[in-house]
Length: 258
Ligand code: ADP
Ligand code: MG
Ligand code: MG
Image (cartoon, rainbow, N blue to C red; front, side):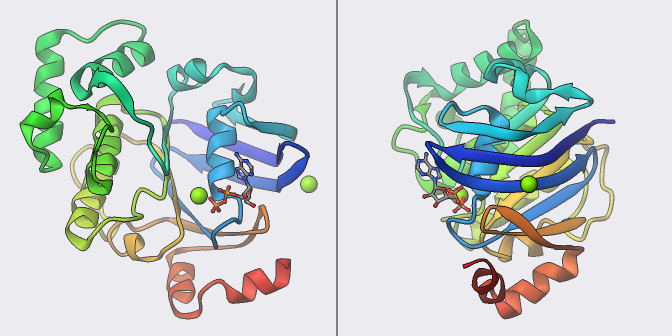
């Protein structure tokens, strides 16, 4: 059982305040959707929690199981069980997917996985995500299509089994088929089916699913929906709030914060 606790978080880039007091608690087994218009600060929240140096925490706290995440280096946060799938994953020239993933597991666990076990997990993960076996020998994210990048993010999730996973716009730029494969990957990982019923064992991870669009929430059912506007949460509810947003859009919120 793990808990990510974000308390009155204020974050600036340079001298511009972007997050203006965010409060959010994510527990193991829960899926929270953060939805909001472009520029509302959703990625800023993800980067600030993950420890990107460009984002300055001006006040507030972020605790993972009571430990101060903001005091940890980026690699320590990963070892503590935090995972971030970035909106724009970076290329790692000269490092194959296979080596990248093995290094990531080694960094998180503090020891290298046994080769045979790693090869098996990698193959199972790639099969489940309908990824071509040749993919493992390509350079990480180099020339990947949007769909390949997102599948690779979910593959990392399945192999690293974090306590808390932040997925920033994992749905953006995906066609319907890729969206379904990626959503099924997230669900398999959560141990839930598309309507939120328990399947299999699941990793008991807390998931923070950041998205601009409601369509992924038809496949990955959230327990809670938070609407982000102007750098803070302006409304919260259950899955029905996503349906309301699908009908009405963000206009009401952007007007209120403009
Ligand atoms: P969202 O993910 O909701 O679209 P972002 O967190 O990317 O929003 O951006 C929120 C605001 O912060 C925007 O006005 C954006 O221009 C600004 N911002 C975010 N990151 C940076 C950065 N690294 N440098 C300068 N401005 C930034
Ligand atoms: Mg405040
Ligand atoms: Mg963003």
